[in-house]
Image (cartoon, one colour):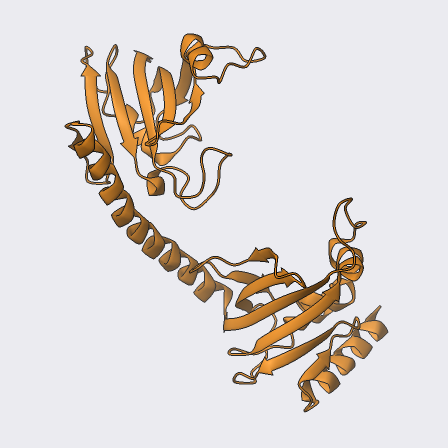
Length: 301
């Protein structure tokens, strides 16, 4: 195994030092550098941050990084080389600023990278092309900081968009709602009794969730589920229990429940950064969806 690793490393060094724009990984995958960067290759433990677009010969997009959300790969030590696929090996051979193209036949892509047969219905006569741009190479600590800053910036930008959409909806529907510092809006539709629920308490609630456009996606109330076409005979319809600030529900829910007391009812307008953010949760809850919940606080323990 050690001899193999030495040979792989020797091949890697020889290939990188080659002046040609076409290069080849130790596993035999060829790629073309269409634009050269600073020439400094990633070291063990560094993270390669890149954008990519994956298309076929009919210009159909198979995958791509979204704006502001790059892909990233950690550079492992040399002992991992033998088991790495060609794409991972290639990312050892690039530098910041490089633009790279990799071409595959459909059958080779599924065999070498997916490691599965070509799915039924996929046109195996097409060719596939990865277009890759290396944005940065950084330490793991720097990458963690970079990710946090990126997420915070995206959250701020999306919150500004959601603020406009929620306010527009409330104005058009003549709804007067209270806005919290986080951007949550709410309307108490029925007052309750006693103190507001607190962090660590168990709230028992009935709820119904929908989007601003009126699409319903969930309810704990059977009559509502039946009326909105959500009824599932395999499900038990009953109040849902949440330990505030502990149960794994969206952030907007934890904030919402602390604005309610026993017996109260309210409608909450939750901007996407307080919900599922850029993640698509279901066919209805797409990325950056603003969620609306009608919640009844049945009990607080």
